[in-house]
Image (cartoon, rainbow, N blue to C red; front, side, top):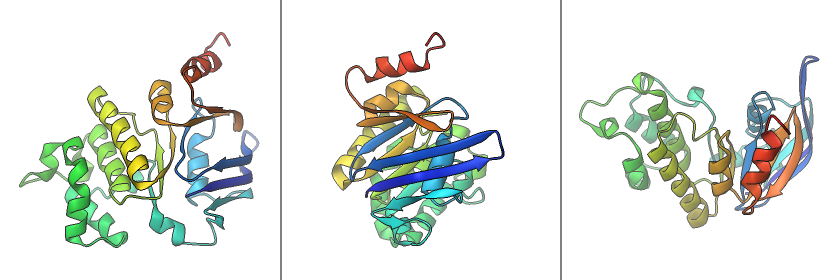
Length: 235
């Protein structure tokens, strides 16, 4: 799926303005979004998913404006925060609910979840599983990410997917993201504060600074060093 952003503007009073003149993400690209707190990363992702109304400009997915169409939603998986979860369901109940929303029956959802079961906590599939609302932050994050991935979306949007995960899970997640994009031609757009992880996973890095795109870098062996220099307090 392609992403095209044109003159996208979102204002919050007189104190902050997100402005992206133009941004194109090609089909099957893996693009990372980095920036300090308050740079506008989550705002941009919410505008992309039509969860916020822009003050100006457009977001198009496969050349269709997000606010005018619904077809893109059937091909998009996303997890931005805990509001995407349903606390009073168990993880399995939630997965089957998500599968049903995306047109997967019970058996198809069960099969689609198989590659992700070892990433999730074993107790989620026990005889007396906890409700999502009772899970730790890390396990909630895993449930949300898996729910966005197992449907094999053409576009996957994630906000800080590595936060609250233990080191082993972070490494496993990087492998899962690469596999999904390679095997199912998924376009990936994720934000992260972890510069090492995002440069390892993504083909391009978009740097947001105070609401504007400060750089758009094709990932190379020097990218991590460039990003560290940009965000260095001495820079």
